[in-house]
Length: 211
Ligand code: ADP
Image (cartoon, rainbow, N blue to C red; front, side, top):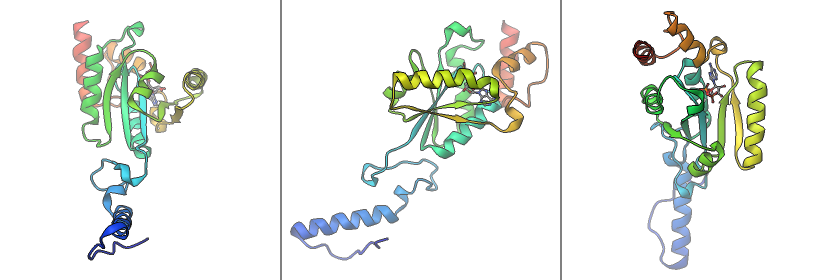
């Protein structure tokens, strides 16, 4: 790797070339181009020549579970930026409103530098395009997830060739976990503390008292 030469810069065209070479050497050696710099935010300035890799993780998140969190953490290691995209999904008659689901995700990801939460309605591929994302992340728990997820991924590819779908497997202990089961257990008075973050457990108990 070329070292930053330092020293005075010549004038004219050679000076410009020298400045450019120096800038490139600095960027190659410097922390800004290092995707794993200590800030935790992997930001590549345009001169790095690297595209920021953004993944969209869509779902109902009604509510967020430890299985979702496991997928988010894995995706955050692979991508520069991960957007947890809460789908409005009124058709599914969610227990929590869109804003409540967003809030529960926001509280869980506050210490993750390269993860954000957003909400969307309508076609997922259009949302991915709007956000200029490269990939859709989905979680695969068991073979039973596969058929639906496979169909969905192929349909999304048909709608937008540019966007890839990446599947992530959670830790084995979360492979049986779903928001639906968590709600069911909580409704029946069971303990869900092993399946959701504490703030989700509190929100679930409160919500179930209301409905
Ligand atoms: P959707 O209504 O889109 O299925 P969910 O919130 O149920 O929304 O799930 C969002 C994504 O997270 C899906 O890809 C789903 O397979 C995945 N997922 C849900 N629970 C888990 C889990 N326990 N482990 C891994 N992935 C999961």
